[in-house]
Length: 81
Image (cartoon, rainbow, N blue to C red; front, side, top):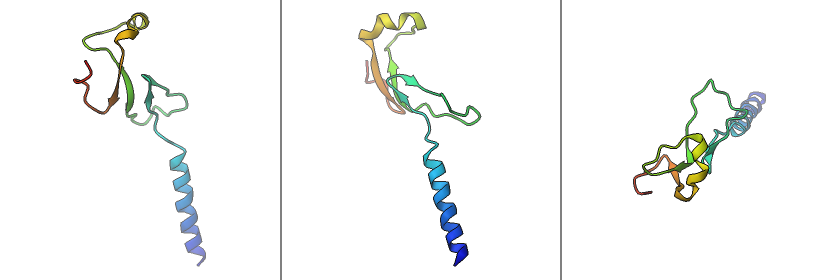
């Protein structure tokens, strides 16, 4: 009987630990990696800024905001022209 409580306690502990370590996602084109271990693979899922047929330098993004589109990754991007 005592070992059943140990197993249930371990299962609950693992579940809580896993729930607290959610993978970072991209929100409005920003991926916040603060507090994230970079020793494990990171998935780049979320809403990315997309500029059709544009390769922008960091200093020029502000002047192109009227062409900004948010796309879901993973997903298709060729319909967001």
